[in-house]
Length: 266
Image (cartoon, rainbow, N blue to C red; front, side, top):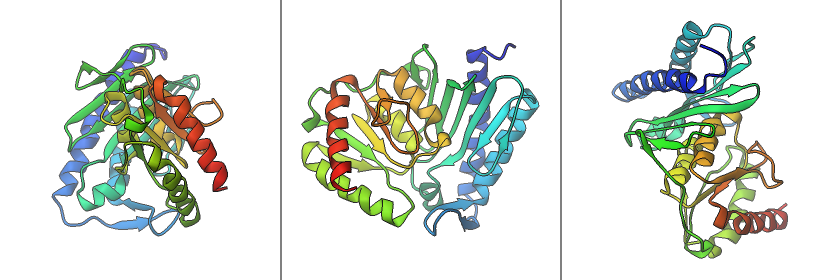
């Protein structure tokens, strides 16, 4: 296999994500998991996050020992092939901790710094979202497309909130200025699932500030391949400062509203 074989990278990622998803679902049947916190008292991590990451790291290392890997729970390994895996072993840990549907395993493969393949496995919804760059987006093997909505006032918009209290208050203020201009807001708790919801038209758009690479790498590719625009507010790729995903007919108007709301609450 060559490092640029995106289809084979996706096949590996999809297989590993399915195994990790089965592990974390089995973990739901046990007694409440051990919970620690990370950046703040509301930023939680469980032993199942760590077990899932260890499983994923092990499987990827067995198959491709010279690739780099970046994982949410502390894995940051360099490589020599030009391929880097970006892993979120449980995106939506709070949902997972409460047994609330809306968590997923997310695995993306970068080639020379560009995300080339990604999978988001959402086990409780029974959804496996996949994409290869320039190859379209799929849910459970079927092609998907972002929303065809053209009127922002009729758009259902998803968002998320920071674990950091001051940033969360600012996000709430931005939301307060936005909500009168859209159909409604959804806050579901996992960025990768939200991005895939844009990809399949389950919501019309999504925005959030404060995402890490493992939060958006696979989901952003899937949404892009489904026809959405996924950028920050300056025209670059999604990043910690901002991630906005919307179909072309809604993107610029929603971006302008968010820029104005953000400036008003700076």
